[in-house]
Length: 208
Image 1 (cartoon, rainbow, N blue to C red):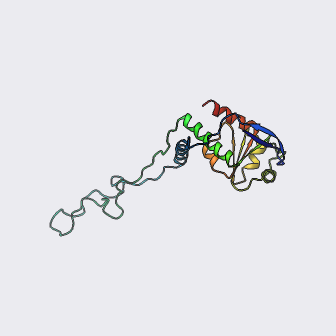
Image 2 (image 1 turned 30 degrees about the vertical axis):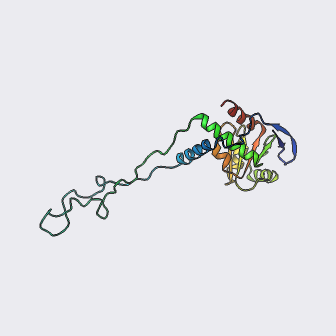
Image 3 (image 1 turned 135 degrees about the vertical axis):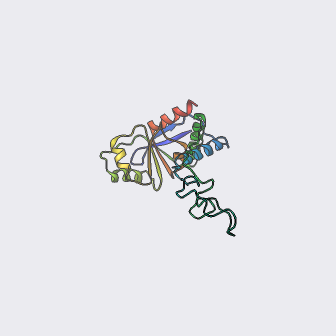
């Protein structure tokens, strides 16, 4: 399969032939699910914390005698049954990360790329070079290539001008071909990938 290669003005300047075969059936769907769940779990802070009856401040003295008062028996004011008492089985700080093996991650990436290519959401450019680290230059580049809304920009190397120009654009994710994940591929509306960065992605997929 061949894909069009454009320059930064949006004009077609060549073709790129895929080295890997697109996934056209249901294979890889579970891998994508596992990777997305693991990614969303990993970004959870896991800082929720409640106090048990042993951690709540207050006396451990019995409030009143066990019998003879006509009131319900009580052992301490820190009881979970009482207002401002401890919490039973409440959340504690924890790590939500899930382990996903390398082969599953690559299968998910291949599946995600296959779907975006079939939908026509992938744009390959020869290279991305900015003359200055100005946001308006990056915005103009994206507009010339027809990218609006959430976009993923994948390059082979992150140079200073590109990082500074893209960091103030809230809907743009900037990454490299060696680091891009299935979640990043599926998140935006359009993908902008340089030719050299796509070659690095293919090298990763062919090693699987």
